[in-house]
Length: 178
Image (tube, rainbow, N blue to C red; front, side, top):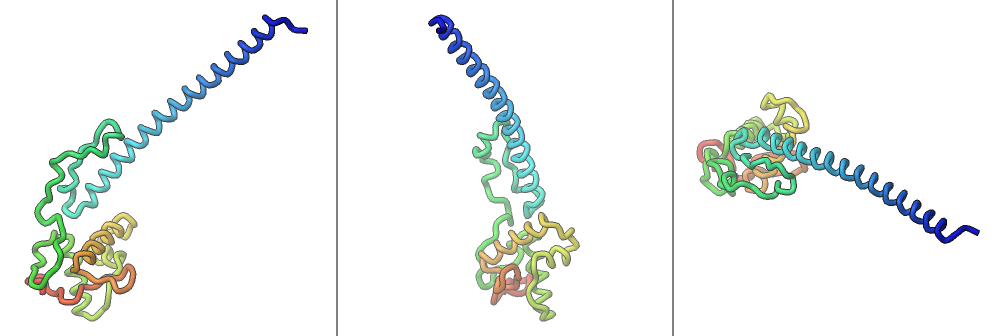
């Protein structure tokens, strides 16, 4: 029969091995956590850079600071909060000129007005990208889709079929918007 001291030594040894194993696992998890936080920071920076590139006015509205700690990413600087001229799409109303819109939005309206004038029907965002001479890649198409959807929401465009855009009733001509 084993001695009491021998049993205690066995239990102590088992507990020591468990503690060592848990410490190794904790070290591995800490290293994995540090790598994940670094990756998170890199993706946050990449997303902000893409937002800057795809912004309607080529980055003038995307001035949020990139913070060292990704948990602080929700805190934004107040310098980027103010609306820049022509960076917002106003709700369309009779007589509102296209000049209140940024050049990118005006370009979309002009392409759709040309289609309406030639009686060619609605345009998809892929077709718009092609008409504008852009690379027809998902990022460009989605940027155009976002702008077109914003114009639909504000009454400038209509989307009678999903993904196919036309000028809204009453919207015509760049001069007076009516």
